[in-house]
Every structure is written in structure tokens, then in C-alpha cells.
Length: 321
Ligand SMILES: NCc1[nH]cc(CCC(=O)O)c1CC(=O)O
Image (tube, rainbow, N blue to C red; front, side, top):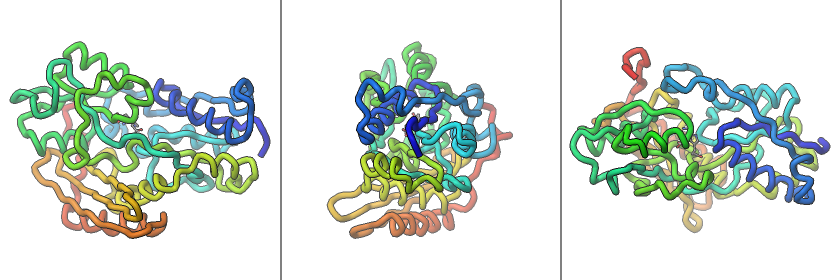
């Protein structure tokens, strides 16, 4: 591998903010002077299926890898050398020939409550309209408040914030991490508890992907060592282990979150029925975890949840949007 190292990214504002941060970090790790980073580790913008289709729920589009496939094809074709993804968007299985080389330190994993008129989730009036396209957020909100009316809300973060500000919804839910990276945290009225709104596996984390064959190239080894955050990588391994066992997808309401305190990892994972009336949850701990043990814990707990919950997948044809 030689410079330039081309970084593939989606072109949404959030994706560009994230990949811009990683571009600078990679450039610095390689000792590139600030004013040469743009040329030495250039960003290559790639439009994904998930970006092209904005008017439907992700589950209706079918298939996995909606936000990653075209970028992964560019990696495999050699048009780019590194890809930056939101971990939450990365399917459980890596395509043949690719790998996640580094997992940078995670941002706040919580969900944010955003509303023009109401200061907190608990203050929403009876029958309030909540905008989200996430089956997980829908089910978790309905578990607490079955009276809420869930309405479909997709689009990028700016679009969603504008619709909340316009009063199209009484409230919306977004990841705190995305809002932090975009510098729009002033819209957050409340950070929702990890317990009530157990985040999606990998929420708040990024994945830096490369070709497996190039992982040991000296140039790659340098930025991998600088950017990988072992605690985040272990926590995410546990969450993604649970996701695999739960067969988590955008058709199921699945949460998983791992925290490392001192020497101990604590993982919680759950599945909900889409209307929130049933909830299956397991938690477990690991002392001095490594990635393989964390993944195994996730698979075990996720498997237990799956065994009790059965198949909670939603048939997209039954949705009215
Ligand atoms: N569902 C889309 C998506 N994928 C990643 C993020 C940003 C949060 C993250 O980095 O995990 C978002 C927006 C959101 O959930 O509000």
C-alpha cells in the first residue's frame, strides 16, 4: 500500500462529518502535514441504495447492507482503500475479502428526545405523534406509552430536525452521537436512559473497513494502531454477537448495549414485539473480556432472548407507512 489512501464515504452531512474526522486522524497517524492530508488521504463520495431511497422504511427496501454495499464494492474493486461506516449500519457478516480493521472510541450511545413543545418523553400528552422509522425506537416508546401514535420519519438528520421544529410531529428520536458529530446538540431536550431505550447494536460507534489482504501492510498497521479503541471494539463485539444470534435486522426491534467499567464488561440485550407489548431481555457480565469472549457472550445472551421471543419479524407488506 502506498499513498494516497482513498477513503470511501457516504455523502450525507453526517457521513462527511464522521469521515472527515477519521481522515484527519488517519493523516496524522501517518505523519502527513495538515495541509497535505486532503491529497494524501482523499475522501471519495459514494451514493448507497439507502441514500437514494428516502421515502420508505428500510425494511420495505429489503436486503441488508443498504448503506454499505456500494462502498464495499468500491473497496473490492480497488477504487478506494478504506471505508468509514456507522457501525450501526454494518451487517453482522463481513463480505468475503473485507474486514473491520479499527473501531474508534465510541460517542454517547444514547437516543435523544427532540421536541418543539415538550421538555421530556414523560411530558408527551396522551396520543402524541412520535416520528421515527426505527422499529426498535417504536417498540421501546410504545412499551412505555402505548397511547403514542408512531409516524414514519426518514431522511437525513437536518430534514428530521426541521420537521420536528415545524411541528409535523410532537417529538422525534435520534441518536445523540449523530447530533454531536453534526454539532446540533442544542436540539436535544432529553437524553433517554440506556435502560428504557436500549440502543441499537453498535450505536454511536464507527467501523473502519479495509481489504483483508491489506490489513498487515505497514501503512495500514500505523493508522489501525492509532485509531482502534480496544474497549469500544470489545463492547461492540458483544453487541454484534447478540445481534447475530437475534438475527437482528431493520425488520426486528432489537437492542444491545455493552459497557466496560474497570475490568468488567456488562452486556444487556433485548427483543421487543413491534407494538412494545412484549419485551424479552437478558444481561450478563465478563471479567477482563477479549473480543472473542465478548462476541460469545453476546451470542449466548442473544440466543436466549431469541429462544424466548421466537420470531418477531414484521412483514413489511402489513405496514401502512
Ligand atoms: N439509522 C441511521 C443512522 N445510522 C447511524 C446514525 C447515527 C448514530 C450512530 O452513529 O450510531 C443514524 C442516525 C440515527 O440513528 O439517529
